[in-house]
Amino acid sequence: MEKATLLHYATMAVPRYTSYPTAVDFVALDDGQRIGWLRQIADGQAVSLYLHIPYCREICHYCGCFTKAVRRDDVIADYAAAIVRDIRLQAQYLQGRPRVVHLHWGGGTPSILPAENFTAIMAALREAFDFDGAVEQAVELDPRTVTPVLAATLAQIGVNRASLGVQDINRQVQEHIGRVQPVMMVERAVSHLRAVGIEDINFDLIYGLPLQTVQSLRETCETVGALRPSRIACYGYAHLPGRRANQKLIDESLLPDAFERYEQAATVGMSFKQQGFVEIGIDHFARPDDPMAVAMRKGRLHRNFQGYTDDKCPVLLGFGASAISEFPQGYAQTIADIGQYRRAVAAGNLATVRGIAVGAEDRLRAALIRDLMCGFAVDLAHYGGKARFASELAGLQPLIADGIATEKDGQITVPETSRPFVRIVAALFDTYRSSKPVRFSSAV
Ligand SMILES: C[S@@+](CC[C@H](N)C(=O)[O-])C[C@H]1O[C@@H](n2cnc3c(N)ncnc32)[C@H](O)[C@@H]1O
Ligand code: SF4
Image 1 (tube, rainbow, N blue to C red):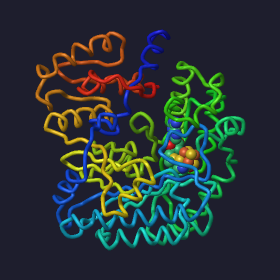
Image 2: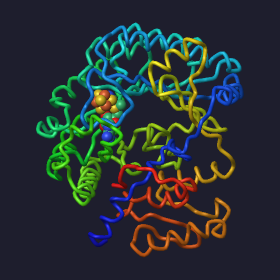
Image 3: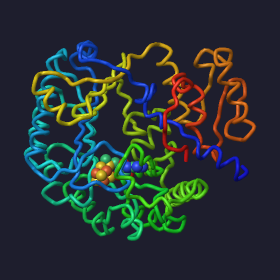
């Protein structure tokens, strides 16, 4: 592909399609609608749970997550109490005790919670839900906060997978992103976790950061690969300082351009594949025996708000400020303002503010977009045939001409070299995109 063509596609703003419809298409939604959906969950039905802890000790310059800096421990304790209340409130609408298959502690930095808050939240969950089967329990951790005591608490409540935010190991890059974290700290965190039996370790990396080069990224990938993680997620840095004030601290003159980003992403992919990891979708890598790699081989890879997953559960219940719940009938999001969230649950409300009910057409397009995002191919015959997608196929022609996709008898494929651009192909099938100009991060 010519450089000008590559730059044209690499700078296109497109959603990440962790859901369809995407969260920017949510509309006003209230507790009544969500309660109706909660009531339809049956006793013993498989559910996944997501807990959002929106606090960090300090905010990294690059961060795009929903989180706030907190100094006082009483603020964290009050929030943990609100989550317990939230769990009990939602539980009263359930029919019996649904069976948990996956539990994810996300943030922010869940490792900011003291041991007693972890155990109180877990106790509330065990009262409301059945944890008797195999449960994958994952937690997002800041390596700077991982102590032997924290590791022991996590093991005791049943955590069996931990994601560590590594970002980059280069000291100069770390200084420019406000996240100084010597690689020794990551190694220590990994050994504390392994010492208590938490063997499944994921690392989060970012490319496209200030001062990063192809060479520096290769070093980062080789160093972290040697620590034998089960999975690695490597996201392109999403720089949206208009939305995230902390990102104004990033020196834009040091950011790699779109072409360098493309080369960095390719370097990351090459390095992990050379180290024996399997490439999963656009931004994940896994050891061949990891459940996500197995799911991909078996065509069972899925996508949810945490990115790629092997969790295909159709119900995901969210707890905490800004948390999104997914039901077969639609999505519901809790208010993001932490004070308002706490006051709402204290008053006995679920604090639902946004979401969207999905219809048959949304479900069909969600599955089609998932095929593309997870397998880089879709057979339109499974979705009603070519004739149903005449305008999308017309929109696909320039992409075919530029080598981004191929189409034969309704089988659309994104070739290996164009995989970073799969979101652009997916966006053609997104009926919400045509009507709304919204700023997303760039395709690469
Ligand atoms: C909730 S944090 C992980 C846990 C913990 N707070 C930490 O930072 O170690 C989730 C991950 O999102 C990624 N991330 C955050 N902001 C990003 C951005 N602007 N662009 C791309 N990735 C980002 C980082 O890799 C980060 O580790
Ligand atoms: S990257 Fe992690 S630690 Fe840094 S501000 Fe974001 S959520 Fe907090």
